[in-house]
Amino acid sequence: MDENAGGRHDAQDAQLFRDLHDAVLTDLERFVRRRVAPSAAEDVVADVLLVVWRRLADLPADRDARRAWVFGIARNTLLTARRGERRREALAVRVGTERGGQESVVDDPEVLARRLDLVRAWPRLSAEDQEVLALTYWEDLTSAHAAAVLGVTPVALRLRLTRARRRLRRHLDPTVPGPSPSPSALAEGRTP
Image 1 (cartoon, rainbow, N blue to C red):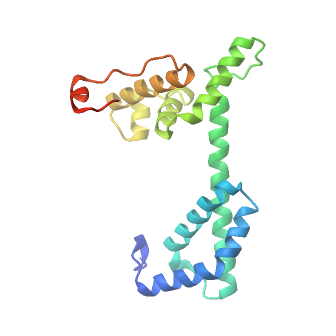
Image 2: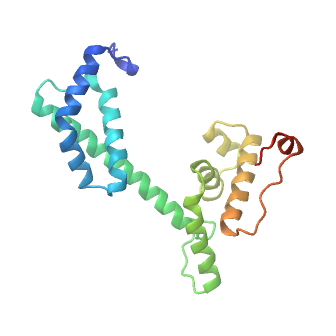
Image 3: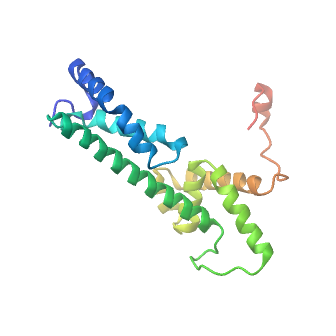
């Protein structure tokens, strides 16, 4: 195994990375900005540079090949980000579909309005809430199986699910009251 595997780098590696960074950053930023929204470009560039740092041992010796290598990493990072974005969009759309995976045409304006509310509320949930709801409802996993996916106990999963449902209800209907603070939380000045 390479001595730099696992993120252990020495001063020489750090200098090599700085030199590579200085040589490709402008081109890398331009490459990424042409492919993603300006608001996402900085994050993608940071992700690319993190992969470059982790894979520094794989850096080609030829300077021109280095630039192409970094662009290859950028392309893969962009593809991964797009796949994740498509999954999130598909899941947000599926929030409004009926359970059981059956796509249907909605003629009822009330049902359509509820679906649109769900689509709007979904991104406001935390990633953890989205994950527990998705595993339970769209993947149709039992508490035990969803808990195994998340690496928690079934009891912890059910607690997370209850909280995620409550937060989703609050996003859907702001008049739904939040949880009441416990007496100890009130005494300490904390709120849920």
